[in-house]
Image (cartoon, rainbow, N blue to C red):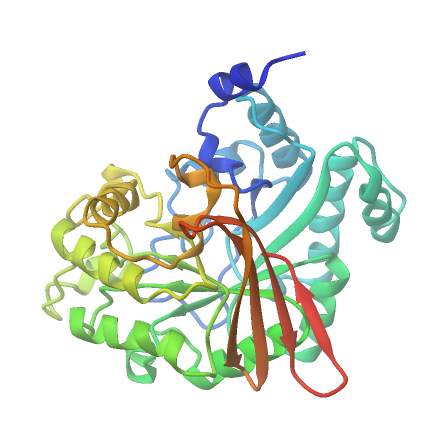
Length: 386
């Protein structure tokens, strides 16, 4: 039996599974978005619109012809060789608005994911999902990327049927004028409705945020980000922050000089990210900072993919009080463990309901565990995992 020390030495990129669940990212086949193309999206005919053909996840998917079964098997093999545990898996489906694909494809895609995790093919979707409950590689979480205007009651029921636990919404910035100018195709009200419906259905809700968009500026980005957590209509559980960059072949690359658009420099990016880190409340996790875009595809200054690491080192050196979940998690802290633990409860109102964020922390506010409780009327309450 391997020792605990040898396990730590052998694991490559331990951050992937340090939170207890190993993520497994799968890419959908290319499909044009119904609303058209957002100003900043770089994708072509053979890759999803918001990605380039040189992004690592897309290159893997291309080589495997976007087959979900093959992608799962490939990633399980790689993660195992890297030393990561694969008993508890989170499936993350990326590449487009999943619910805009034909129903047959949606069902087939998720079923094939379960088949691969189970190690054999099942007769139908329900059997595959049921068998996975006791499989060697259990799907304990499933994330779907979605547009705020694709969250009808019927679509939410379908996501629940698939076993989805988390939905990420492409919010970018809470500004209807900018939505129009960058051709997002939805409104702030769509974000409001989607957030409330998803929370009431028990999903964890994530927002994709994009500072540095055309027609915005640093001051506006910070103001709009504050609104995400001060306005009771929003308050997501998680965010991904993808600063806008000029990618070759995107509509933005063709017109950025005409509209006098200048993307953020590295220093400006760090500044806005630090301010955002200060704003994040205790109940929210930053899932990711920066999108993985190869240097040769960039038409603007190259910003380090691991800029988050630099920012967090700066914040720790200055002893800045940061409440964001991952910053406080036990797996990301080298402090000598104080095991005198206590329950801390944060209560807040969001999306016409009351939220309770329960966490086990020590005296240094290091986070050991968490749970979310939502009450949205006198009869219904929901427990949501971290």
